[in-house]
Structures are given as C-alpha cells and as structure tokens.
Image (cartoon, rainbow, N blue to C red; front, side, top):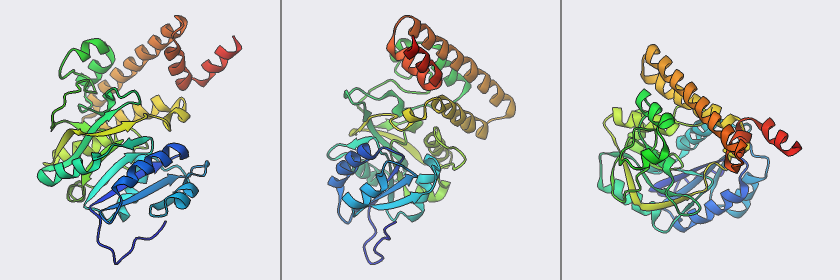
Length: 315
C-alpha cells in the first residue's frame, strides 16, 4: 500500500473501492473517479486477492491511488473496514468497482451532507447500463412483512404502489427524502457517524452489510437520505456472477444475519421459514420460465445450479 503523505492536508472524502477480479471495470471506475482528484480526495482500492492483475494495473496506471492487497478474499465488509481504518477523509464514499461516477455526483452528495448535520449516510440515484432506475439501490429494512411482500407480491403490483411492502422501493421519485437504507454500491458516510456506530459488520461476507449500517445509524439518531440529483451508473453484480450458486446463498445468509441480530429467536425462525418458502417459489418460477424457453429463467437457474447449464448444453 502506498503510504499517505503525513504532511498533506486531510482530504474531504476518502473514496473506497473493493475489487475482486474485475480489472477492466475497475479501470473504468477509477477513470470516472479521477475527475474528482486533487487534495480534497483520496482513493483507496482494496484488492481481495484478484488473479487478473487488478492490483498491478492500479499501481501502474493510477499511482495516486492507495492499494491494499489481501492474500485472500475477505469479503466486502472486512475489505471496506480495512480502508476505513487508514482513510483520512471526513467522509467515506463506498463505491463498487463496477460503477461509473457522473459529473458532479460526488460533490452533490458532499454538499448535501455539509448542509444536513443530522445525516449519517446518503446515497445517489443509481441507474442500470440502459439508464433505467436500479430498484435494488434503496429500500426498507428486512422484516417478516417486507419478506412476504418481496416474494409473494408481483413486481407489477409493487410498482403500482408508491411505498410497496417489499425489500426494495420501485419508486423513481426525483425528490430528496429519508429512506431506511441505500445501497453500498455508492454510499457516502460521515466519519463522525461511523465513529459513533462502528464499522461494517465483519461477520457478513456480502449482502445486507449496508442495510445493517443504515439500521445502526437510525438507532443512534442519524438519518439516511436518498439524493437523486447525484447520479451513479452501476453495472450490477459483475463480481457476483462469477460466484454462480453462491449468490443466492450469500443473499439469504445476509438477510438472516441482519434479522436475527435484532429480533427474537422465534421471530427469526419465522423469518427464515418465509425466506425458504420465498426462494422455493422463486426457483420454481425460474424452472417454469426455462421450460417455456425464456432465457432469463435458465440463466438464473444456471447461476444457482451450475449443472443445469451443462445439462442444457448437452441437449
């Protein structure tokens, strides 16, 4: 890791990017970050034992970026915590390696935080590659009610509700407002707030660590805001697609870890039953889609059960 200059003025914001085997996306991300360079910004990349030369690329092409090299994939939370431990900014900006920052996106978030001393976290409007709104970028805290809504109410029904009873908010409302949580793919956190509530939950490898952080912020009296005037493009799940069947397992584990942390054993058991039933219905839907020739159903099944993809090729 390149050591910081002890004589330099502390930056306003520390941009923290965790990477695992996405060298080309990481390069594009860092190019979009470079527009916010200067003494007011420091960028830290934590590489989780990539084998594609990502860390070498950063050190060669972006010498101003600090690189932390891990000898194993320690997960999203622990990698971010490593960077937060050495970061000097008064804000921490967690940013996925498969994102692009638009002009003014980071300054808009920082300006909002500067003007709202009660805000512990804020997040931008996140869009997909086709510029559509990314639904999974904000939502409600996991509960039995939101789990039932997520798995057993149709997406069309939820889209027709301004505040649907599921995990995610489908509304693309262009107004600054408080939300339960914003996605860790692009999340600005206040140093003072983090000092109050602590780091990300290191026991969670991936998924719901951002939800947990926002929940602890709310419990400590800090507020979480959605700031749609700031815009970030997220290619979504490029690293996780390489994990194949681990995706669903990691998501389920993250949800259970969050819920059981704050609720009784009885309620946690009910929550797990709802998740089990919900994922079973989801997989059954993918199987039906695959038999009807829908490519997305087979693709999703292939990620959960890699053998399905091999069986399809043989046919």
